[in-house]
Image 1 (cartoon, rainbow, N blue to C red):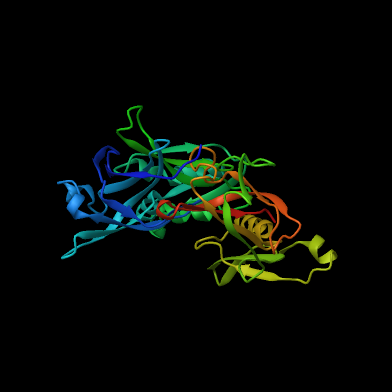
Image 2: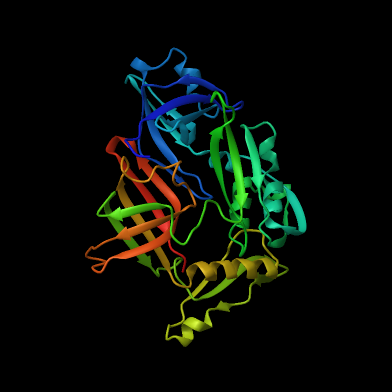
Length: 359
């Protein structure tokens, strides 16, 4: 399925998920999403063409802005307005953040021992189900067990706990999807998905971005900068009783035997960790990610001819990049990598998946 992206914008009541108004005079900047993280965008509402109830339809913290692909009738993006500015101009400026931002405004406490991390994440996120937006939780076991305790006195948010947990080796991934709540498409639901892997990974991705073809330009960013590449990892925890907890130093001896120099990285994965077992899990996960450095592909593709977002591919899915020839790859290259983020700009007919290759 191809063709230009035309977005219909709706104002949604944040508490119930019910669509309240269509915002036909709303104009957006590029929209983006990222696995396990908050993204934001700025939009403008032309008051000359806005509905009579535009004020209540865009109230910060009480509404949700919903972008729907009119070709597929699929929700593509949603964001909670957190600031609104207007005055003598006929344009109202709104800054909206994806629903993940709400997770950073709800605090949590939870305790679990020898429990699947997906189940721990579900328990940590339980406060979202009370007095909040129309959240539901879809959690699949990941098979990795852990001990985890977060106390109310620690003032940790749901977001900070999920991000702390997903950095453990073998932990699940998570994201928040905005989906239709009913067949008539009069309301939306926010689904917190927790799974061993978000999206579909394949040896050859169903969605192919090619050059020549839908790709206008691309860039492969290979980095071994601090925080991106290391072959020896040590994770540090909190100081308790005058001593600081630490992980074992985990080193990729195969790389050293292959002629690599030692590149070390010491870091603190999160506050409050004193368990060496947890720190070892964090260090192992970091080593798996950083041993070969970061390899990220950023594609600038023509949206109207590229594989359709939300139908052919989505966040976390495997995409195939097929380059026939370029200065960077004169002999051509075909790789399959996961889309961990994307940016869509319908006005310029541009879609930009950001892909990560495994180390």
